[in-house]
Amino acid sequence: MDYALELYYRESWRDDRLRFNTSLFKNKTKLALHESYTNFLWFPDTFVPNALASKNPQRNSISHRSLLRLQSNGQLLYSRRISLVCECTMDLTLFPFDKQLCKLGIESYGYTADQVVYKWSSGSPDALKLHKIRLPDFTIKEAYVTSQMEPYATGNYSRLYVCFVFSRSSGFCFLQLIIPSTAVVITSWVSLWMESETEFQDMISIILAITFLIFSYNEMMPRVSYIKAMDIYLGVCFMIVFLSLIKLAFVKYMRQKIKIESESFHSMTALVPTPRPSNGAVALPPPRAGTNLILRNGKLNTEYVTVPIADMEDSYIAEIDKGGLGDKILNLMDFQVTPRTLHRFQWITQMMFFFGFVIFCLFYFLVYPNLHNAMVDPNCDKKEAESFAEII
Image 1 (cartoon, rainbow, N blue to C red):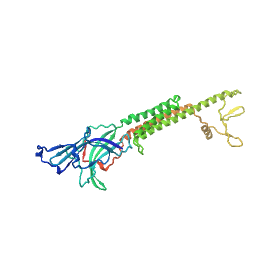
Image 2 (cartoon, rainbow, N blue to C red):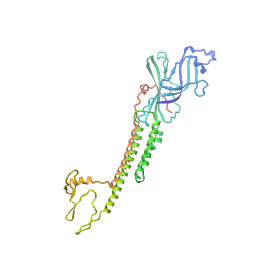
Image 3 (cartoon, rainbow, N blue to C red):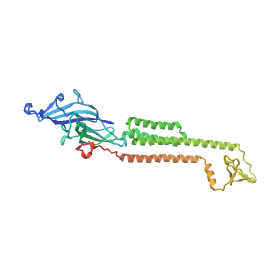
């Protein structure tokens, strides 16, 4: 990952060969030289080791120019405007609540520390100064400078570091990802409450909407192999919408089954003749399918049920007392889903979805913003910082 910056870079060094007598220049202690003199003067060969691309001062350029000033004691000041694209190692585990540490290195390419030593200016002017920087995605929390010695195969080199601490602004992610995905989840709940009017095509459209959000989010994010905080939120939203689709399919299936059983029961009632009452007995409706009743002496005996035994040559009659274990087993085997049971199931699952998502959101937005990823870089140790820039 990388970041781009525009800066005015100023460096100063002393070359005793360039001393001059002020009396020869009308007692001027400073001379402004044309930028073409840069081809004939000695320079410390400064470069940025973590730069990926740059735009240096160019002749006849309006935006990128340079300044060269010589003092009577041989002190040279070289100032130039530079556009840089620098590499920055970012940890996106807590995205979009993350903080990033990016650095800018400055050193000589051809001169070792025995020949050139870089030091930050002390006093005035400041070593680092920021001018009302406003970034669309980040806020600069801290900016400071350090200095190190970098060992290479060709020797030790003096290097300066500018360290920036960025805090991500989460407004874009809230507007483009969090709010739309939350709205999709709420829409799936509304569709479940209106289950009788909701078709599978509607729920599939909702799943496609959350899938589109996930794909658009992945397109704008760099490819990383670990899970980010935003991945967890979008994954939970997708899981809730998917479970809502499964629940809708189950509820519709059970309602259809109840409807078919009800129609079958009424049709059987119409076909089976009603038994005539005798001896003062009360006519009863036909028994349910699968229940065997025994008539003894013209009376209905409810204390006995016939249990068919599969794969047996004979049939037996099992006598089971009321309230016994066998009666409970038969009731469990004969359990049927009623409209009331289905309504209760739908209400309980809706409440589970709602409160589960609310608890997850509370945990997510209270815990994740307060977590901090470890920004460990020995080159940007705050304890060794030489100066801090004022954040305007």
